[in-house]
Image 1 (cartoon, helix red, strand yellow):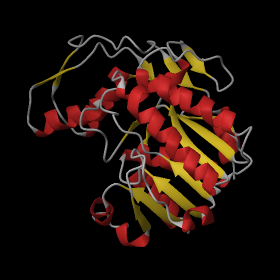
Image 2 (cartoon, one colour; image 1 turned 90 degrees about the vertical axis):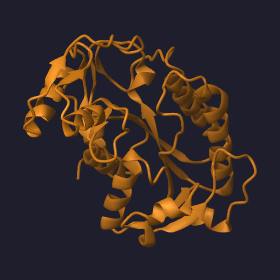
Image 3 (cartoon, helix red, strand yellow; image 1 turned 180 degrees about the vertical axis):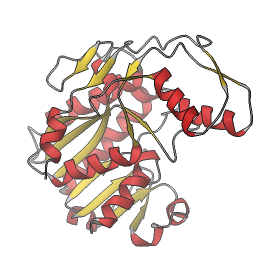
Length: 282
């Protein structure tokens, strides 16, 4: 498969590229900075288009239409889900980019959404459920992009796989993420780590597994619509943190309750993995 990829140097993207190349796929990455791609071990194994998809004036090569699928992982502003930039700048830019790709002739699109689209619903979350992405702006923007793409399917012929990501950990994670901060605290020899009460139930997967699932969904062209990328096995944040500390053989103490729980998330939710299992069954 000839894959056109955005977000190749991001947290998920790096792992996706490695696995896709291993499976024999050809990849063209769209990147703002070619030199960042070439810093990776796989940098010389991919074709590169240097372009900023959030700019309005881009001349795309004719070769775009020759790709079998677009995997769209890129999204800026992820360090702050509450920033209005997601709705005001990022969403319009990505609509413009995707419309160009569709008009160019891309027939198969896989895009990552977010579990936050479900809103503050408790329990197991299924793809068919009503959703309430009232907050944060990041979730609103992702949901609006999905709705817009579904409306575009009435005008253009293309398949859409909307992969709702739950929680991930692993190499290349955002330095502001919980486990990245914890690892840094352990490495710095800090005696105490401040965190929330840790009683939130969440759905976590290693980022390598997330990338593997995305690739398997992509390879199943008859798997369309929304797909939860999840484990289906809830775990408390505190348990995850303790497991991480034990794996690092650290004696760092936890200062629980230092931070409040995020007001835009329910206390206990996880994904229903049934559709994912059907889409990735060999």
